[in-house]
Every structure is written in C-alpha cells, then in structure tokens.
Length: 227
Image (cartoon, rainbow, N blue to C red; front, top):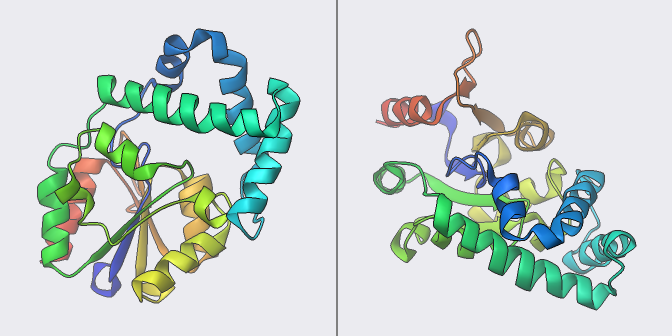
C-alpha cells in the first residue's frame, strides 16, 4: 500500500489525539447547555453524509434544524455554537484534558522529509485552534499542507466531495491518498466513496484485518513502509 501513497489525510478527533470521555467532560463544563449540546450531536448525525454544495447552505440548514431544539434565532444559534460551544467550551476542555499523540512531532516531521503530503480533515470547525489546544505548536501545524473542516465544504463525512477536493488541492490523485481515521462509518466510508485507501485507528488491533491498527502500530507501519 505505502508505495503508492503520496498523501495522508488525517482525521483529527480520536486520531491525532485520544478523545476518550470528551462528551461527558464537555457537558460537565457547561451542564446548563446539556440539551443544546445534545441537539448539536443529533443534528450532525442527521446531516451526516449530506452535501449542501457550499458552506453557506450547510450552515443555513444546520441552524434551521438546531433552532428547533434551542429555540434561538439562527443568528443566536451560530453565535452560541462558534463562540460558546467550540471556541470556549471545547477548546478549554481540550487544553485541560487532552494532548496530541506521543511522538507526533517527530512522526509528521519524518513524513514531511519523505515528501508525503499531509492534511487534516475534521467534521467540526476551528481545526487549527483545536490543534493548538491539544498541544501542537505552529511549527507542527505548518507540517500539514491543508487543514479543513466539513463546514468549509458544506458537507459532512462520508460525503466524497470534500475528500476529493482535498486531494485536488494537494495535487495528488485519489488513489494515491491514504485516509487515516478512527471511524469506519465516516472516515472509512468517505475514503471508499472517493477511491482512496483507508486505515482505521483503534485502541486494540483487530486480528486478521491489517487495515485496523492502534496508533502505535500505525506509526511503526508507516516508518517501515516509507523508508
């Protein structure tokens, strides 16, 4: 596989850091917003895989659905989502409880030296801010040629357009891209829908399935394959 890989598209949450217990930690920080936080998760689940064609169209539909739960106006809802939920609550939870994978700096540096292009693609926005929150510095972040969220494209994983546009921006054919993520139903399905390769990051390796690895096993595999 590795001989054909020219670019790696990394998922963020659960991939570049272990996000165990994050839902409960977010709720504990903002317990008075528990129903809104739950509404966001339900809304994202309902919109999963749908392509609205543009960021503006996606945000409009997201706000319309969220407003039914929060009873806020669309303007108030997006302000709560961006300023309170993501920038305040999520970023602070990440800073307090989470750190990027051990050895990530040297790993991405090795991939860069091997001329492997790298991108980060998350379903949730403000990706760079969240990367900083888990301990990455700007030098590490600059190793990634493209950092995107599904909101930027107006479609949630596993819709293929975002994956294909990232590959196009990197100048790499889809068949030479490897998607690395923790969820088969979003990252994996998106990779398959786009004609890309996929490795799933799990806490325990699945016996008999070489495309499922722990993060440590993935790093060891990549260091061997790209040498």
